[in-house]
Amino acid sequence: MNDSEIFILGAKGQLGTALLQRYPGSKNADIGELDITDQKSVEAFDWSSVKVILNAAAYTNVDGAESSEGRRTAWLVNAVSPGYLQQVAVKNDITLVHISTDYVFDGVKNPHSEYEAFSPLSVYGSSKAAGDIVVGLAPKHYILRTSWVIGEGKNFVRTMLELAQNGVNPSVVNDQVGRLTFTSTLVDAIHHLLSSKSQYGTYNVSNDGEPMSWSEIAREVFKYAQLSNTVSEVTTEQYYAGKTGIAARPLQSSLDLAKIKATGFTPRNWQEDLATYVKKELA
Image (cartoon, rainbow, N blue to C red; front, side, top):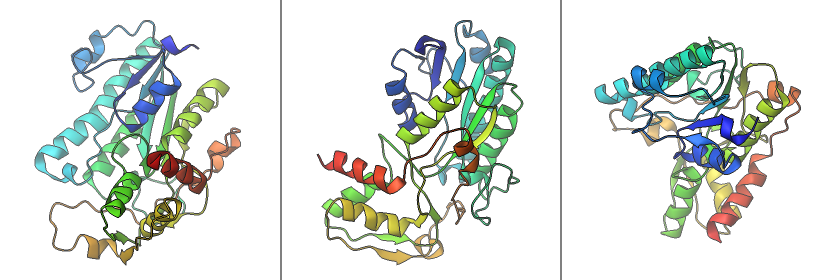
């Protein structure tokens, strides 16, 4: 398989940007050429030379999805559109790679396995779970379930660095626990599954290492940045007290990585990737 047989959706997002760097000769289209929320647009597109669709497109505004307008958009982008892609994948014998999230779970079990029943707490989580179900109907599919993605774009690490450099000592939640997933690790996992022709199905993918809370991760960011800012700990309930339109968050986001490791892929430790990421951001 060469790059020209790969089609990347969501190419301008954090993951899409990283995928384009890995597959520079791949195809992608803006909404003027292909609108994945429009069934006719998807069906009319020329898929004849495409062997793999990498679907990194998603509506990820977790709180925005709780509004009446956001709810419709979340379901359209995260659930209905993957259904259109699944149909063209089946019709054209295309392998469909789709990105999922820990938000399809309620965050009670720890860690989450690929075999855990869906139990989303939010509109965003429900729409992503529905997308997983429909993508799973394609004979040739990989669903990569991930969490806490960090790449090129707005993300937690960059926010913490910006706050610290502005002299802010942030309050960060201490009861949501998980691991960061750097886009480089996610892209490596996608490439590994495709090149090794691993069994189709759902795989948890995050960086490896000791799970930590967001407040602990914030301290790690400051440590690697050699900043003296302090972090105040608050619970999720305290952090969002008095705010409206807030989606429920899973408190446990750690993913069981045994299945992806069994294919021969070893995710890097998130703290090692964080140190490298922070150094690059400050360069």
